[in-house]
Image (cartoon, rainbow, N blue to C red):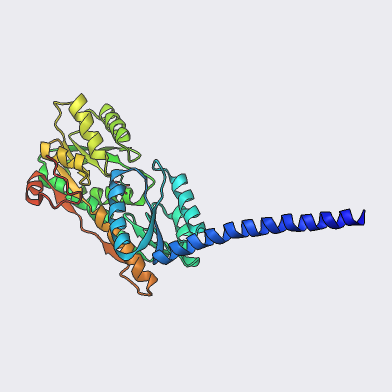
Length: 331
Ligand code: BGC
C-alpha cells in the first residue's frame, strides 16, 4: 500500500514538472517576442480619429504613419467606426488603460474629454490634441486648424463672392463638437454686420455624406428660398451639392464647404461648389507625431501649433495644381 502511495506521489511530481516546464517555456517565448518589438521601436503612440474610415482621417493617419516610419515609432490607429461620442470616449479610456507613450486625439467636448486627457497626463502618457483643441485640458500641445478663424474666413468669402440678399443654410458636422461650433461662431461673427446675409437654418450631418444629404433636404424643405449653403465638415459639401444636382438643378445656390478631398476638389473644378476652406490633415498627423517625440525627449514644444488655413476657389485650384494635400488630380 505504502509503495503505491509513493508511486502516485512520484507520478504526480513528474506530471506537474512537465506542466511547469511546458507553460514556463510558452511564457518565456511570448516575453521574448514582446521584448523584440519593444527594441525595434522608440515609442508607442496611438492616433484616435473621429471616425476610422473617414477619408479626412485617413489623410491624418497617412501623415502620422510617414512620421512614425521615419522616427521608428510604433503607431496604432484606433477609433469609432461611425462618429459617436460614447464610443469615442470609450476608445480613449481603453487606450489610456494600455501601456502607451503618447496619444493624439481630438478635443471634441470639454465635459467628456478633459477628465480623460488629464487622467492620461497623470499616468505619464503624453497627449496632444489634433484637428480640434481642448485648451481647458492639460494636453501638451494642439496641432491643427484655428477653427474659429476657418469659420471667419468662410463668412468673409461668402460676403466677397455674393451680391444682394443671401439666405444661408448651414450644414454642421456635429452640434456637440467644439470645432464644428467654432466654425459656425467664426462664420456668424464675419457676417454679423452684413445685413443682406442671414442664416435661416442649421442642421446636423453627423459628419456623413448621407447625413449631409438629409440635412440639405430638410433645410430646403423648411426654407425654400435658401440662396447659399455653408458645410462645416469634410463630407458636407459633397452631400449639399448632390441634393442640388439631383433635386434642384435650377437653384444654383452659392456653396462653400470644408476640405480638399479628391471628390470635393472635383466638385470645385466642375463649379458645383464655389469655395473651399482648406485644411492640412496630412501635416496635422505628421507634426503630431513629431511633437509627441519632442515631448518624450523632455522638450516643451509650442502649445498652439496652427496649421495653415485659407480659401480656394476654382482659380486657386488651377494655380495650385499638384500641390494640394491629397496630391490627386481632380481630372
Ligand atoms: C474636420 C474633422 C471631421 C471631418 C469629418 C473635417 O473638416 O476637421 O474633425 O472629422 O471633417 O468628415
